[in-house]
Length: 527
Image (cartoon, rainbow, N blue to C red):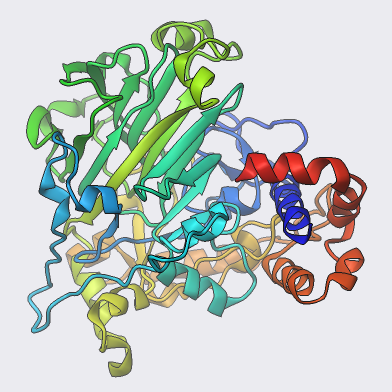
């Protein structure tokens, strides 16, 4: 009974968080409408919010202030992110290239070898049924938890331990160890994202796509300011894939190309790769190049800029309902038509559409900031350099946008900070509530090229921050939930069932009133 109640409480906790960091009525953000101070962070979907919406995917161009968004933890050369299921490592599928089976790490011309990060996998003889625990043991964390803490030590541990975030209906197949992104009936699907961003690099995903008309599977490199490179799969076209790219959120549909894939993408594993360099992008399927785009061909003379992805990007893998009846007619038509939520084969057999992922790799390339990252590394204490892999992350290097609100963002819009712990202290807060950046350690790209630092720019930023009013108005819902409270209450539940009635404040009251009915329903559904 305790486990069922705990499952109910955790479900209601996540539900409540969704209300805490979003306004009751959606507020849209764009180049013509920045977010208000109460909900200061603009998400990649053009919605204003706070808390988790201020981390990584937050668009500083359309937020209340560019510093509403947190600095972005950088995936820096020669570190990389990867996930390998037992299924992919054994190469059981006849169509599963073994390209990802060997992870190679490159050095920065140093006298040491890099070793793989230790995976937090469970022991072979134990079956873990709790989805959240299974995901965390594989370095995945729910996006509403990631870097949501007022404690620097806890945030630093998260930066070290987690490679990916997830949302929606995400699970792990106990028999194959594959990541499953699900989309149950009438839902909005699921999303997997890298916990760090990179400026140029290569991503590789080995997976099977979702099937059925109107269901979309996507592999995307996405920047906070709207740069994008992607593969998109229509569930009604299982022998094809679309490749596309966008610059700064401008939707130019003529950039899309269609490619044939064989055998079909739903029943067979294929390796999809995007090789993103400073001067060109290459899309590959099963190791074969299917498209190449050169930066020189994207020049816009009116803007006097290249409409080419050139800002730090994170990796996303998603399943979403392109054919949902709530979408625009043009989106539904592009997706192949309305989704059949009742009679589709997967709905009849499993109750959900799904993507099955058995390998992920994200490798950053060197860029113009590589020498700064080396300085970050050299500044570490000798004790912090004992394990090189961990040392790279110990630099806590972040990318920061500067002076870009409603402007075209590119490499020149970026700064690097060598020792910054990214975090948001509450679900009604933004980065403005926890500014702790040492601006004396910021290096701008033009300063790197000239060998000097822009002291005037630093002084202007310091003055702007000192004069800024960061006394954010109280949110509609009090911030009653944080990581520390959750941990304390879970510990109380597991160690002393008599204290249950004292836990979780209003959320516990709701869960108690609904316990007899909801615990069984939500426990079965959630797991």
